[in-house]
Each structure stands twice: as structure tokens, then as C-alpha cells.
Length: 122
Image (cartoon, rainbow, N blue to C red; front, side, top):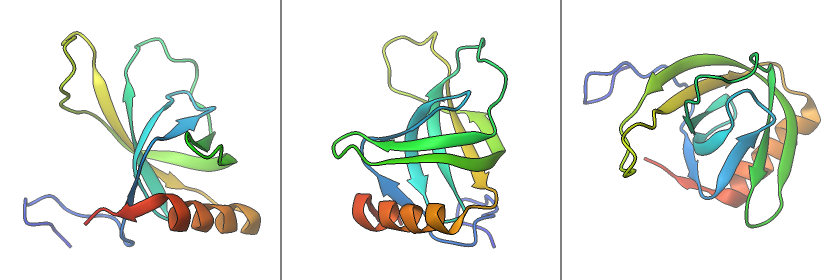
């Protein structure tokens, strides 16, 4: 399936945008752009000196204290993106990740996170 911009869409499920939510406990912590039950996209500042890649990440929601820990994932994309920051020396990247096998508890908490803290991004 492809989008109108000519970019191939690999996602099988609709993504939902979230406000003030972050990935933490990963080698590349950042702000979540969108999420679904299959994975998420996150923007982060490329510091060039990240520690060795982590195989799990946590989701944290700023305003409510919601937290979901140890989600197994693999990186699907990791590309430089444009940004509007005044410091043009910062390299901002957008990383897409696919969740690996989630436990039933993690699936339930992820569904709750999407239901309670997201909005339709289409």
C-alpha cells in the first residue's frame, strides 16, 4: 500500500499521536510521535555517543505519571528529520520501532495507553 506522497506504507494498523509522552530506558530516549499496537515512532536528538543499543524501552506519559516498562522492540527505521530549533548543529532523528512479543499484561497496558492518551493522527 502506498500513500499519496509516493512513500510505501508498511504499517498494518493506524497510528495515533500522543501528547507529552516519551520513550525512556532505551539507548535513544525521545518524544513519541505516534503509536499503535505494533510499534511507535519517536523523535530524538542524535548525540553520536549513545550507549550500546537497548532491546527494551519504557513509555512514560508526562502529565499523568503513566508508565509502561520493558517493551521489547527492534528498530525499523532511523532517519534524520527536519526541525525548527534555533541550534542548527543539533541532529534530530525519527526512529520507527516494531514491538516484539509483548506479554498479555503489556498488551493490555499499551491498549490502555492508546485509548486514554492518544488522538487519531490521520
